[in-house]
Picture (cartoon, rainbow, N blue to C red):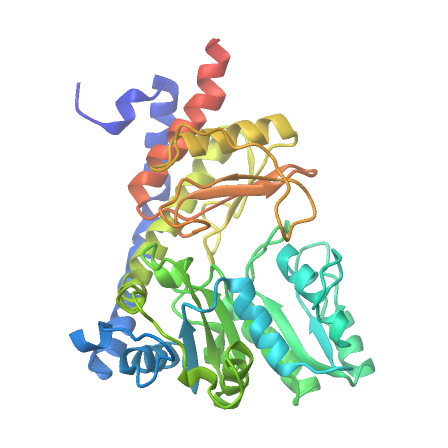
Length: 425
């Protein structure tokens, strides 16, 4: 028998996996081309800014004269086509970066307006529309509004236009690229370009903010290339390639980055302080590897989508749909199946494979969560993970994968464990 990783799978599943590999081969080749293009762009940024060994020394204390930190900011600004950037380990998550950005801009009586529907669960807590935590935007007198999406999951431009015209206190128009825990498709860069142009034509003074979490390197363009004013993302997602242990970034107009730096640190010091200690080398290397690792995760998502659809599950996006982030969803329709599959993914993770995740209450989320995350960095979703709120229609969100091979093995083994082994019991 020819040596193959598939030999350990049930014969029927072996045939399905082989068929899926043949089916998706053209899409995998397209992603490989995209990876090489984005890798070239990152490499050119490193060459332009003369990255050197001494840039990895890091700093302590106040972080004065940290040339590596400042150079990394310049590389991010170049790649994302913005005036400035702030890449910091002191930003502990994408949510923290988003909150830092929004609090730095908005003042009492200003309105934050989301045109892409209700924002992600953790941002709802920052705004203050759920939970009872102090220090929210509503506590500071900042208003919030949003436009519901159409039934198709697309932006309701008619409603957006009416709200932009009616409310002259709107200062920030926010766009969430990824679906979060919504059932809609994530928005492509082309769709975001249309949103930006729509807002500019009707409310030219508004600051357009992009939540880019899960989006970096997923296409060959980024939303800031189309005129977004400010954008945030996490370093333990795409931009950190599974190497960076903490941190997030902001890119955008120079004046807005200055405000964000003052909010993160203190006015006067702003983005010019902040020690990088032992993080800076990983932050450079993570950004360099980001296109490749993101491509591996996207290829894994394509495989996951095709295989789960082949065994009869409802998935989104489908395997041949355009990809603009890492997230793959699968609907189970009942909590038991959702929990079982999430546990199976945990069983084929490199860390804590012996653990059975169970639904539990998590800070920042309204419903109990089930989460499989056998990752080297806690909470890293560029590494293979799956999670979801325990509410109908019991949708599991699968994302990440440092290598395409790991995703193929883990998903195939999870399918065998849940849909084959249990039938034989």
